Image 1: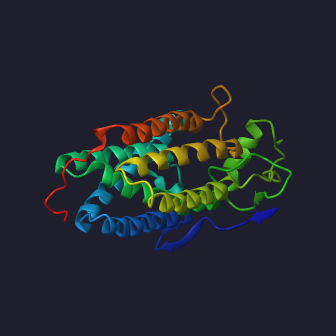
Image 2: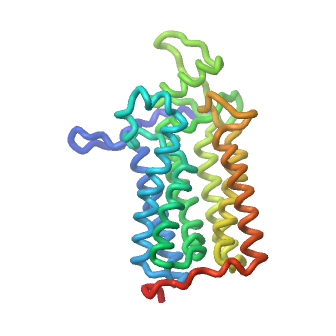
Length: 284
């Protein structure tokens, strides 16, 4: 078992504290942008176009990720509306960001008459490697934590991140409150698992890109791989207090995304409907 006692604050600028969560999420965006530019060059997409699409993706992604988190925890935010904008403290849901970014990019692609499926394939490679870094931010922040375990590997939080973990474990009856001496139980390192899963998906897509040639199918393959792997890792999560038919909210979304990904992969491979809209003049 590993005892985790890392300060959640990376550094301070004057009186403003910058959390590791924000630093690593920003690092994830930077990694994603590096991959985006590299893939855009390979696929003959103008760098300026990718820059504009990235801005749209970031804005829509963050808004969607925060909105879904607030909706999931609507009771808390109804009583604390000022906390809605505090994304520096954590509280971003990947699938909210995925759909928010997808809609933002889709709007801009349609407006500029860009090749939608080609652009989707480029972003499919950037998303998992970017999220891999963001999940390590979750690890330090103490969110998205795993369920209690007595086996190895396991981590036990010993810093200021334990409050939410202790609360969840007490509310589920896994831990009895013991005044100021209460410590959270060792938990499965679900954040590390998800980070490694995303790295694996990234390299799998790099290999698949050599063989999957029809536009859009690489993006569909990302949907399939991510949804299937995320569904499995969700059984390690210990931060949910409720479940629907034994499934977490993310697992329910995973099933929808998995079915949509399989359908899209087959559709783009078997029909002539996968032809892209002609590229704009800026793309050579």
